[in-house]
Image 1: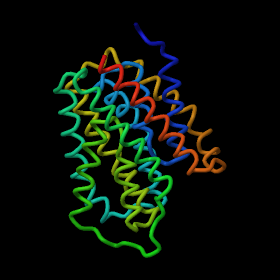
Image 2 (image 1 turned 90 degrees about the vertical axis):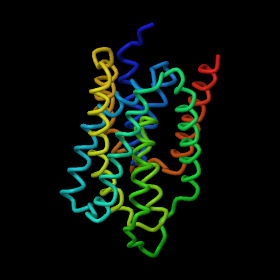
Image 3 (image 1 turned 60 degrees about the horizontal axis):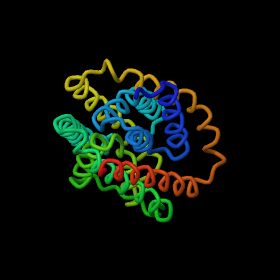
Length: 251
């Protein structure tokens, strides 16, 4: 059964509202919703990342102009993140979607738990951490791979880990967002090469339109909504939808 176009607009709207309030989880939210609607994992992740190329590009440029980019951090994250993202996208397009779906849903279920956990524990350390060693590159590699496989995860994996370990929140968010454009773009290129996008244009366009409508609303609401409460709600929704996807995949 062909899904209505407005449903994808709604998914993009909800995902952008969540991302606008939390500063992360657009990919995880939208991919979870798409999987729950029966979209194959590769198509879902590809559509999310194609839509995200525009938003991450604007976000990264804005952070650069505002001086929120730590270039040492970007250098550590960029190449490993791209390698991880391309590898994850290749794996996702090389394996039958029906086989992968329960595993991707399980990953998203775990990420829902991570979001809830971060809601209670993620407070930056008072002492700044100036470390820019190999562990950050490894984090970028893992973050890129998880982002491609799960249709999202770069922000929750990379940003939250760095902030929790003492990185300056504003500079970390700016640097990770700046890097995310290149990771997302590289994943999208591989998806374009590996997949036929003729049947997915409605998903991509719907996500873009929904996200564009939600962006200014989310920006205003982010100043009023309690972030901790919202993170808990989002985490619970992601867990419920992921459990539903796992259940249906096992039938």
